[in-house]
Image (cartoon, rainbow, N blue to C red; front, side):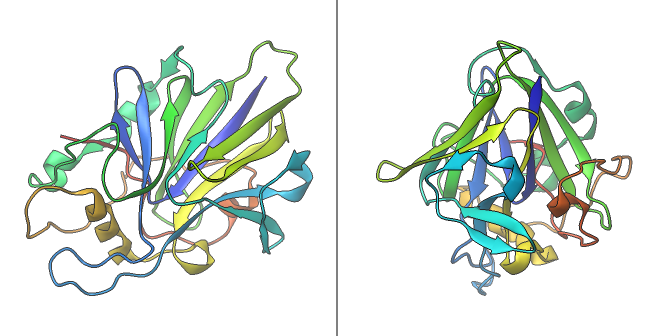
Length: 242
């Protein structure tokens, strides 16, 4: 038995030992790192179908027939079973990843445990991590499939804790959820790439945009957010930070 998490929009994967720290850059009031121009506001949500929730204590907005749970600033997200050390298969992910050192040699994140300029983080220590192209566009989303144990487990809880608010959403096993860090309407624009520089502690000027990997397969997710005929324009950042 398993469940699936899709990371869409702005999310960067920072290598740890073991696993990854997934960091959502804070795009609520970001500015272009070179000219200081305001960038489109971004907010982060967990997006789910209402019929896949069994209980929660987390206020939600309803958009496009989906429930959007806003992620609190400073939150540590917990995805059960993925947050404990185990087998993490990154073989598919590794074939499509690129490096910030290639994109922009000046890009530096000094504290890889608590990177600056982030809205929320999560530990990924177990599961199968893959990269897919979103239908209707070129943006890449990361898909994490998490095995549950014992196999007869019926429910799991995703938790958020920012030191003030502790929230949870309970799902049945085999649910799909999306962690989206995008601009209004959950779409995005090409200049969103520069929001990643909220985390940068290196120099300027910055480099250009990053093309989606040409050989990324189209996601076959059944989640309505993923299956929308809309491009996010900026990829989940499948990077190995310098």
